[in-house]
Length: 299
Image (cartoon, rainbow, N blue to C red):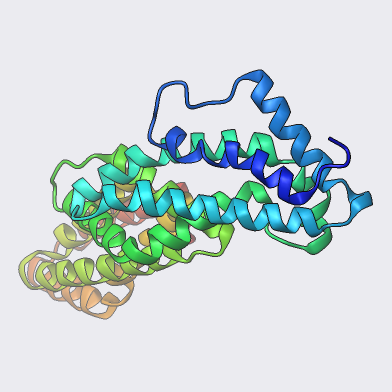
């Protein structure tokens, strides 16, 4: 085995590579026995020791990348084809554990390449190659569809509908994971939901200032922000949630502060109940300050 050539070694390793799609598709007994695992691992070890250079490791690394892409093209993309909205997200969530299981079993055989070759050549570790392939092929094709579906669920929840928060959380974790291999899907999603929230709360402010009293408007603004925080705490990370609450505050309070003060003064002149209005305002301001502190936003 010590004198194994690359061509002979690759013939042996094709026995491992050939299992990838079957593992991904859940075929019974598609995994590796202890004997098979040791045979494949020893083959990789003998082909990739630093004393014989990195050409063999380079060839295996390239083939590993190629096999991951083949698995996705043959077994993942066809399952997503034709799906939309929640059905698309649900299918993705069902595929991910199977793909990660396959990738973990394959990496267990080939991880020796990450000991010397990838650090020396400053390449993406083999442990991340499978993830990069998935995001490159799947996200490049379905990123807009994924984001639109998740945004729709977030907006539906804001409008009082029940949504599958666990599904949203799993997809967003997938987006965050993609950042580790250079994908921008989470950042793109974050920008989109902040824009959605700005439009929603701007419209709410416009309606409230035209139809509600000062006290009712400010109390509704505080309650809406608290509800936004509670809703999104189940699936958004704290950083994004802070940004979302900042957007809500800007649209509901800061941007229209002049109009709010005008309404306050006009209603005070009409009712003359200044002391009660001051007390209620103080109570609402304390509530808002407490809410902002909970999500680490300085009022």
